[in-house]
Length: 443
Image 1 (tube, rainbow, N blue to C red):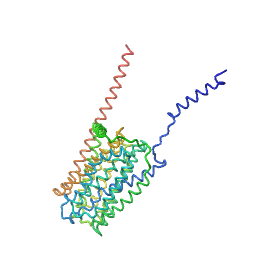
Image 2: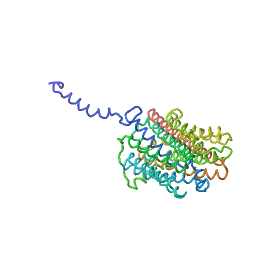
Image 3: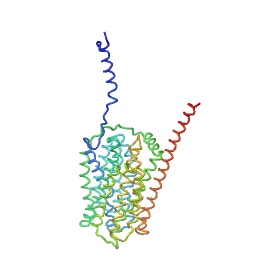
Image 4: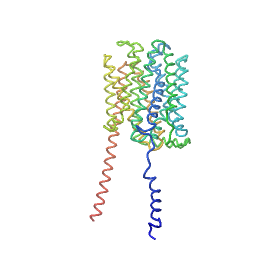
């Protein structure tokens, strides 16, 4: 009997097909633009970014009013910003560990719930010291959002769409920063800074509820360990990576510029020669819309210029904006703020997405270290920028910002040279291998 008549060949073919097909045909179930769940996910994280940035910097546009109410200087009032960002920087790594164990969505939900609860109490702070403490608690609670969001995206979104997805989250940050400052500026002009912070808290409650309802349940999360030794080893491994260290430093320096400029700009614009009312000063933060655009298009920017080229452009744009802001014309100052905002958000989106791509394991910790450095930069920028303003006026704040931009460019140059050396070493190694094989063959 032939094999065909016995069915032996058919059996072998079926067995081979069953063993090969699963490894060959394995569709990627991660989210992709245009696919089911992607829009819900993007909008949910957009709202999380709105709530986080609105709450984190809720007092920034109100600093002149807070200074007047409590009778303190600009540098003292700036601690209401520095306390929240500093606490976030301190707690983002522990929050990332909780995220690895209990899940990204769970930690982000809990973080927003605590933060909005504190937001209800903030307007009733009886003193500057109490306000600073409440703001620190709020910043610590908010640490769970940036610690988990980029890790969630790295796990649930296809790699080619990752920069765009993170850019949308960063765009939510810019909208939150803008809407929070505009809302508080106009409300404070009519009813005072306490009512303004209360209104902002209610907006954040709405964002937090919508976020929880919209965010898809994670499908690719694998729980990790909470053992301190595992966490320390993961962090040590990330800090040993030269590329990650450079990205962390770049994030911190960009945020030093941004934190300093936007902490002090309210004081400059309410003083002579501009003497703008509080509501108009709050509306200045509409330039954050430029950041929304630049962050959301960061993926295309990297596609055209490469990561380092995009960082050079972001740094140059930020420096140009700082220099323009020195002008005595309100129009030129506003143009300077537009350039600073566009450069900052583009640079932040490029650097943060590069961290997610670089880290193969322990993505939450890699992202947390970036966020920690980023918000340390914000605390340093808001404090040092205010001190520099007190000592040397707006020119002092701009000087601090320009030094930070020089640092960004210098680090990027170092990265470019390291990449060139690495490429040369690879090519040299290939050349030596080819020469060796030719020599052996010729012999």
